[in-house]
Image (cartoon, rainbow, N blue to C red):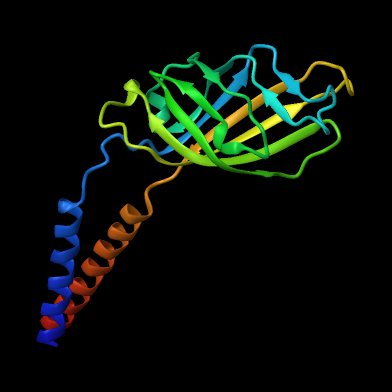
Length: 193
C-alpha cells in the first residue's frame, strides 16, 4: 500500500511538472461567437443556392450572442472573408486584427433544405489583439447558414457561429491531475483508517 501511495504521488507530481513545463497558451479562447451578415451575400457559379459552387459573405459582424472568452469582445466587429467553396475549404478565412482569424481545413454539408444550405467548417482560430498575446492557433469550427427564400435569382442571407474547443493535451493533463488527486486521497483515507 505504501508503494502504491508513492507511485500515485510520483504520477501526480509528474503530471504537474509536465503541466508547468508545457508551453502556456495564454491566448486560448474557449467559447462561441455568433455572426450576422449585415451586407449583401452572393452566390458563386449559379443564382440558385442548391447549385452554387461557392458563397461570398457580404459583411459579417459579431453579435451579442456569445459565450466564454468571447464575452469580453465588443459586439459589432466587422470581419472580412474570402469566398467559401465547399470543395476547397482550405482557401476560406474570416477575421480581422482585433477579433482574430478563422481559417478552414475541412467542410461538410449539414442537413439542409431547398431554401437553406448549412455547412460545418473545421479549422483553426488565431485570436486577435483583443485577447492578448501570444496568439496561438487553436482548433475551432464555424457553422454557416445560407438562405434563399425567394427561389433561384433572389437575394440570400447568411449567418455563422464560431466555436472553439480546448486543446486535447490540456484536457488530458487536467484529467491526469484529477485522477492523481483522487488516488492520493483514496490511499490517504485508507491509511488513516
